[in-house]
Length: 249
Image (tube, rainbow, N blue to C red; front, side, top):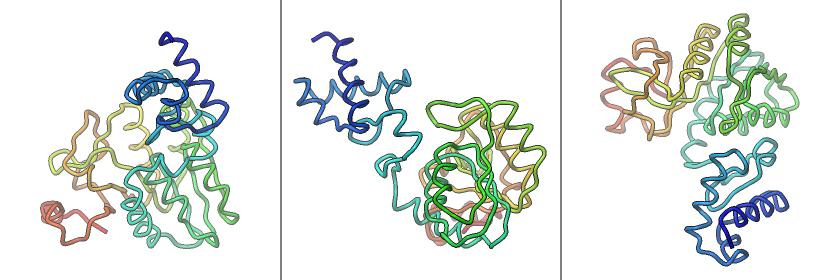
């Protein structure tokens, strides 16, 4: 079977079943799992399916339901979300950025919470519809297919016209030298607009994001309000950040 034909069969199986494992595809198509993993990676890069741990899901499945397998370091992200929820009060107006840590935050919000939440993340907006007392406002714009968030000037302009009590922002990189940085230029601009729109910024950072620096600045270390991590405050990895005056939760 030629590569093009095989990859089309992978797409077909994902479309029919919504989610398939690499082992299932390997047996079905009579090729090695390494071959299937390469196929999935290439098809994911083209936006035809979505790569997840152990297999693939359809792009529609990604939009409407983030399977638990998509959320890596799940226990760590639960820990961060639970800490972050302690900062929320009834009646607050909130911004939540994209990312699976913030998705976990949205999943774990109390069902009796009354709040208004702005987000430009499609998965988070969909998750928030399960919370009956939360008014969800989705910020539209150009959709970034791999992360399912909206980007562009429309998002930045919208954020410039709102004021919120608290913002929960995902972190791509946090370092002592550069503070919060991001991998994408457009996303870094949106995050700066979020900072300007919020009274208090809470950065959600799994421990693997510490001591990482990316190309685009979001804010300096001395501009950070609060960082929530999955580590205990006495963890040696946090010592230098505490010494630098970072407020950690």
